[in-house]
Image 1: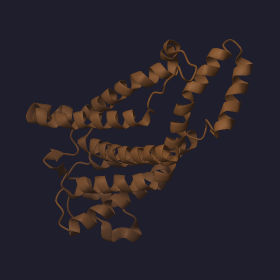
Image 2 (image 1 turned 90 degrees about the vertical axis):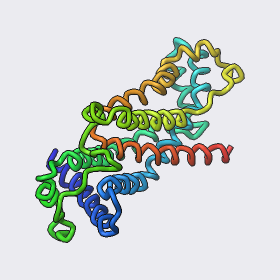
Image 3 (image 1 turned 180 degrees about the horizontal axis):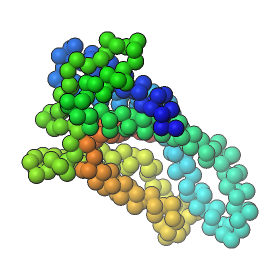
Length: 267
């Protein structure tokens, strides 16, 4: 399975990354490897744009149905069969498929994981071995892409293969800005993903009971917990991976904004 994953996903992405790197190197752009990661991430994000948009729209619809679902739970408490029937009627009435957000996620995961695996390899290759290791992966038909010299693994003074945790003793507060920025970007995206709270009483929902709903509590807590977790992971992962994640998240924020704007305009 690992060999198939590398052959059909990881290796093609590495070839694309090296192609981008060679173009940026030809243009004499500084920090070519770092900017290659940024460009590759943007390309992947555009490739996944339709799938992610579909997922975000489905999520938005499900959030707007939340008050109605809570009202049904209160009305048919203890009657599981009736609750299921009424819930399905509600989905049909609003044209919502609760499983519609799952398929895009399942398709995205292998691609995103492959990109993560690529960057994990690229930024951790030893400088003395990077030429031979990368050139082994370049397709014979693309032999002109092969590296002649090790690439510069620094991006604006930060080594892409090192972690903020390892760099803390030498760079101090400067390197802490990486996980902090990662956490902030993730918080902004998470905040935008949640629909604005509605007037629950107008929807016939007891606000106190709504606050006790597991899904609502989990959503509220994850809004803060998830960005903190991502920031911690960013502190212990190579900076090159944080560069990829932050680029992916920033474009996620832009895409979420466009989806939210389009949704509001259709109301």
